[in-house]
Image (cartoon, rainbow, N blue to C red; front, side, top):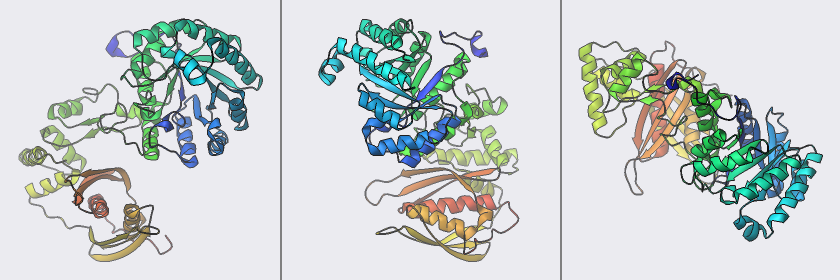
Length: 512
């Protein structure tokens, strides 16, 4: 039970809520998003690791390419039930069957706008078609969910008739669909309450009014027990309700299980990378700032009590807490950051570093770990010898495979290496890794690019966070060339990570 509430609020559902994730179908309808078969299979595996109950792999009627992709997902042997979207025609069901799916989401028109203008039929025709198609799909061994499209703008009485017909024909459940993100929680609660009287009920919400999450909870309070989601809320227009937000809210506020929470962050990152849709920093659960603290008051409180300024621990969703430095930083945060990097400092030295951190933050700059360590070295009068330094970089990407070569100074010796990659940055990074060898196999945890001047000659700042063993460091570098800025930032990060190791990293062999 969540102690903040004294008594856990009750939903009309059981102690668990199932999720049907439609990232691979509805999520892919977001403008500019097109997933390859490999990407869909990879995301499906991640959804399965998170123990999502149903995965809508696509729409078999889209074409041969989509059907091959759905078959790819159904061949993975997932624990989840893999489904296909199907329109209200028998041919779509047959195509789904050819893909070996375990179920279908059968979409039939519910509002007058869709019945008359889109499909060109009548209410009676929709009811008869629904009855026949559900029976056909069940006869072929499929799990069947009927979705009344545009249900939030449909007559509640007609939705009830559709739900009753669907269940009588053998459907496993009926779904209330707010297809255009049109409705309010109050209307949702009223309609879903009526639909739930006929059998298992689902909900499908969009965020056009910013009410997707509110409408999910209204649905669950009204008796629904399955929610359609997409990872990161990706989807057409303003998107769908986000899987990670539904899951954590159910667990935190209601003690209701849905998925394996500690897989959520890795899943979110995978989808963001595959779709090219970056996570907003202030995004709930998975945004960069969700467990990041800068304010002196907040940092001090968090250091004293992890739960002081967080509703749940970051480890719950597979994350770690971050204390960052800026103009709001205080002594406690700076002292903790220095301790993390193994720097012993007196109270006077900490105060001096705090002053420099605030000065840099006041100029609108990010204060990276490298900045902090440089401040500490200056305040303490320490000089450090660089272990890794970038001497030269050449990169080419026009007309063929992107290539790059680097010349580094490593502990006094020069090393040269080259690499190829998917782009000039990737090629240059591989060249650096080759020059440093396996002993410097640091992990790139975060990569962020900002243009800090306008025009065609814009200077960019690249900020990276890299980790090696149990150490991590953030570094920023600026240049007019994004490749050089990226490589400089990564070399500087590796230099900081390697300064506490005793051995000089050995270069990779020619066969690596």
